[in-house]
Image 1 (tube, rainbow, N blue to C red):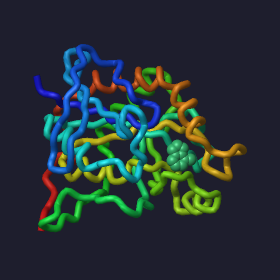
Image 2: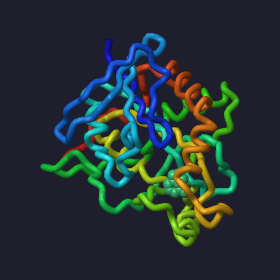
Image 3: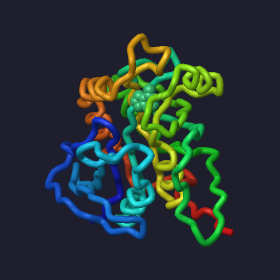
Length: 257
Ligand code: HPA
């Protein structure tokens, strides 16, 4: 059976406990080897990987995004659901809310963003996140009565530190709704590799200066843990609702010069 769906677990999501008959595999790629868990859910084969490693030992700026995405590609994955903990810059998006991001602004500084090293690819990112997978997520969230936003503009910071309040104000002025540290270059590489990709962002805190407290990774994990059952049901329903047929353009080959 082919593995057509990949799940990338972000902070707080290290365990693919929705899967049956889990088998661990190391997938070798040109960019490095990646540990993947392969299992099944409702007759579908699913590949799961923990973005930061199962012990959260890899910080956002050192994640081997190219190896992760290429490993999923080599396994035959066509659709990726990636979870992401995010801070909110928008008072309407509150801790515990899901956001199905539709745009990003890139403030990363040090990350390779392409697989193409002997040519030039100017990737079209008019719709960086797959509109069909996002629509599936919206439908599933509605069915499950979750508190969600069908779109959101994600500002990708370099991390691993949190933002200053001045950065949070700037990001919000630029039109950002959320701040995170990992969607870039993950979403870009998925598109370059011709896969559909959607992010399930979970708001874990308000950004620095909006939040009354100091920010901490523990707060991020606590909110993720409080909401992990909702996240799991959303992923299960989304996986069940996702086939291989698509009318979107994510899987069209990019132009390489
Ligand atoms: N900023 C950046 N990334 C994050 C945050 C934040 O406030 N919360 C969770 N991930």
